[in-house]
Image (cartoon, rainbow, N blue to C red; front, side, top):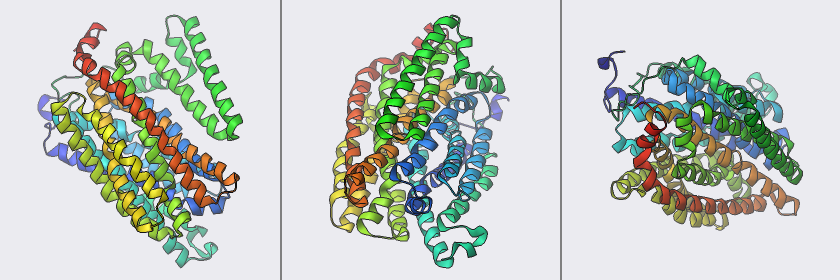
Length: 524
């Protein structure tokens, strides 16, 4: 492809791509979020617990989203990003529709795994495309606009899911007389899933930008995409040890990691009694450890910038615990209102859907804008947004949970939805700024993996488990869930500690990334 064949940075093609990618991200979170408003129907129909709901919303999705995000993130660095995105979109949309055929926890878990695999293509491809389409000066704002799809999609998912259930149930009070004998929650999955397959044809038309073009750092791709994909799948398996120069030492390290992870997950299983949760989480943790271990001798420069840059480590550990809180509220928020205030799916879908879409999107954009402005004055400016949102979010969450007024609870929830999304564009921008253009797909996948494993795989399940625990003590299901969500706010202490570390190291490490990469043999 010649220089003139590439679309211009910030030009018309960039704007079209941004709009389409936001729409894709909306579909991403419609399909992800809809489970929360259907939770009470699913719980009653399949006879499952809050822990099971947390597993479905979080772990079943997150672990495989994380596992496949690594090789597919690498594929985004070596193959057509828009093609990868389109295939993934078609897959997760189909899996969402098939969720409507599930008649057991096992079947629904399998389809949620499929949704996770498909959705793992979205953010690595999109982050990489947008980083090459727009100047670094506006990158945080652009990624925040893109990330607004999280809250637009979550809001729309709540709205559609709740109303489809109510209208379907009114039309077919006897499910055996409904089309395909579908119940309300099953119809909701089918009706929101199928349109995404059509959207995939549009995303296939996005023009690929020049890699590194927005920064004048040309990244030449010399690796065959299928070879890179094969290598990455090997890299997330025990077979990664055969790539090491010292296989005996690599085998010993791999066995040690497997033993530590197995022991920890077995202890957690004995504590909680939830075998499938900790089998899945242990699998994800082991694969992550294999990938990190293998990357060290397969791509030492990328390994060094990802795992020896202390500010990046603190960033990808700290921010996911904000998502621990937000994913928990997203998973159980509708159930909290239905149990504590006695409202219907339709009402909770309308109110929470509108609040999430409007105020959540506003929070993302405000956070990105403030982050960019603060970054102009302070090297840690974007990270300061993380501290600010925690100060705002915790009181709002407590007010939402413990006020006896439904109206005031909605007000607190609205303010919570403005505050908590402010980090969404900040964190990936910080990660992107700390690596080279050719590494952004893998770095984006690594960041998403950490958010998924620490936030999504642990958050909803943990809240569900705590809720079940309080219920076993004799509390009502309404009070149990309220207390569980309140306890979940304590996870933000980890974020505060990690952000302090990130602020300490970032001023020293961001300006030196090129020099450090060159010393390791990177050709720039």
